[in-house]
Image (cartoon, rainbow, N blue to C red; front, side, top):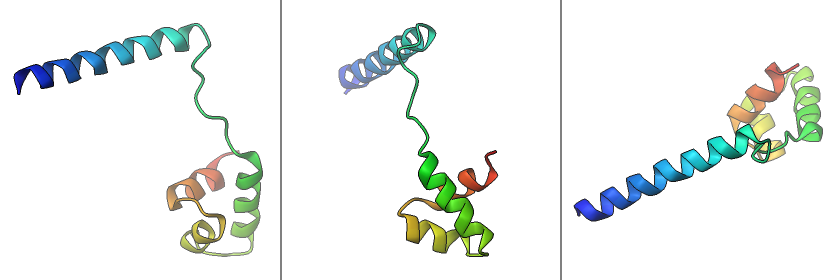
Length: 72
């Protein structure tokens, strides 16, 4: 049991180190925002639809709807 935990912790630490190095060199930038979906969400929100309804209509989470509405 100890070996499995130690191996998991080592992999996790080394992965985090690798990601930090990649971010510094500009290789690891993360996912690009879906600008089209964000615009659709803002349009639907202007029509006074609820966050839950917008999430169901666009196929995303409620958190994504909040994020899209609050970004400028």
